[in-house]
Length: 206
Image 1: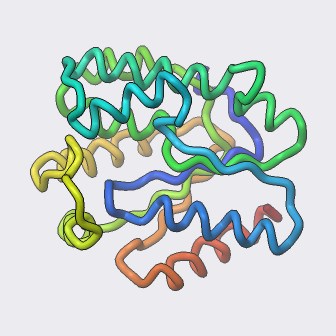
Image 2: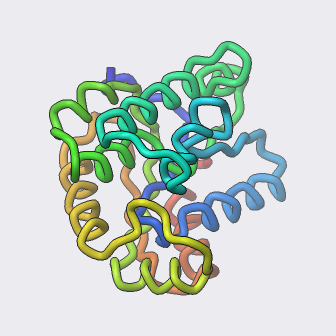
């Protein structure tokens, strides 16, 4: 199914602390200013299955790595196909969809503790037309996580994030035709990163 590419679907990917959420909102403001029809979303979602995922990430409930991977996949399937609010329906209505994370996050994060074959099997979803990978060093990500305060989530450890970074590279090494990978240096200021993203998207008239 990954060979199917969903046009006008933009996905932000990166390590925790890379700045994907900040840049998703920056791009949405740009589309708002230019009166483009868009919807922003994120994974895990705020829908019922996504809330269960967040409870695990925030250590309110415990489960196995495999069960968490299945919850992510179930949330993603609903995110795509729900007849009321699914991404595919929104795209068919003519909006650009911008998502903070998609199945690449599952491949990168959950393949650390689970069998990568299993993770790939349960994440056989259509590909986005654009992946914006905010490539930020692990050390910088951890500094940002520390700065924002609060309790760290399940995956916020140096050794774990280092493995995640390697898994992202594996996932991006064999993308289907029609998928555009835009790699952005995330170590600069938020404004610098935002500017680079706009420049990179400009040739596609998005």
